[in-house]
Image (cartoon, rainbow, N blue to C red; front, side, top):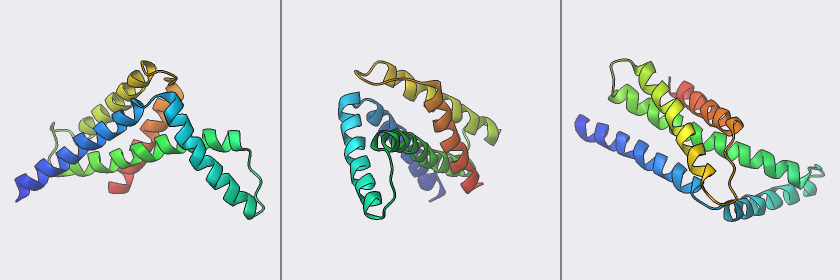
Length: 138
């Protein structure tokens, strides 16, 4: 039963990384339109609460928050997987490998997708999300 759980948790890590990469493979036009649609709904709701927010600013913040949340989830999954069945002796080394490699790979993918931008800022946000997710599990 333990081996099955270990297999399933690492499979969930792989599938979650595939989900992150599939989001990065979405063209900038499609990705931007989707996040703008969500931003408009939220800004409209904030307006009903008499909270004024620039749509352009909120859209930008929403996209950064999406990066953070996406990688927060990965940090949680990777931490559980490492606690259950580490790939290497050092659990910290396990986490650092994922912490560095996945955000870099994600931004490299975005670099080659039409209308997407690869930035160091996003890598830092991604890593921050992973660290926070890992701390929640720790």
